[in-house]
Image (cartoon, rainbow, N blue to C red; front, side, top):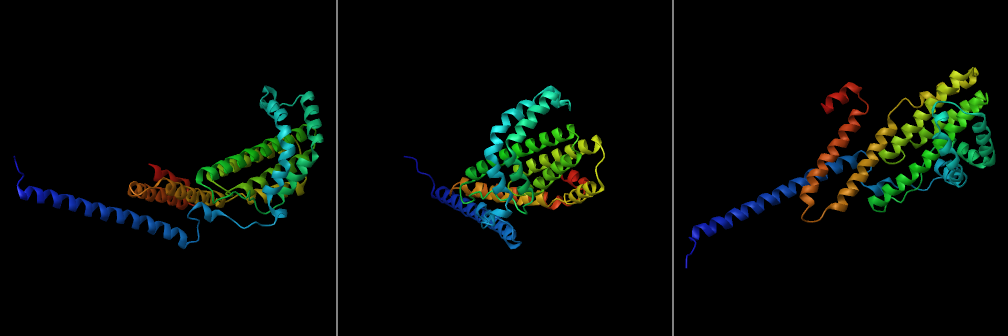
Length: 298
């Protein structure tokens, strides 16, 4: 029977041993690099994982989310009528028929409590839906998505209300609705994940569109114009976007932790390092001119 030369056996053993040592060194390097990045995030006081996003329960009287959750009871039954209206070609063309105006006024008069609660939400200084950030990432994302669905309903409602007020010649009231939209967008911006901040951008766009309609429809008082200028100045910043990136990063880290096992950890650690670098690059670019962002993607 053929026997392998002893030096071949030992050569194979040495080769396997070197491979294992090399793999071990690589694993340790990936873990070290990842731990260094996570430590740097912690050092500046930013959230690292989803549980870090949890905040103590503040006063419900200063939490816009609390008031909007209460308003939801009345907003939900209003949405079928509003959705049918906004899908109509006349509405899309910027027109409200007399029949539509009567229908809308009756609908909004039937739910005065909803508007009162939304206005109270606009006067709050925080937006915190009190999501359970100790849950798994999938549950947290689902809760964030459910919350943005509710906010979109509020945006649609206020858009239609402003359109109705303009149609009825209520310039002051229409501008107040526009300002309310701006305030809610500012409160919601950066409150949760990036997808929620995209809805805050949509709310801001809706407020700009509503404000444009009001100003083009007729004169407003100097006081109302100054109130609009003051509110617009508060939107001249990227804090919400940056906060959303940091919260999205924490969600990403928690998601990676869910995926890892002893065999896959080194590969995921490598990928996670790249992910963290990418997010940090976007955070750094947020305050830079657009030309710098373009350079980064070319």
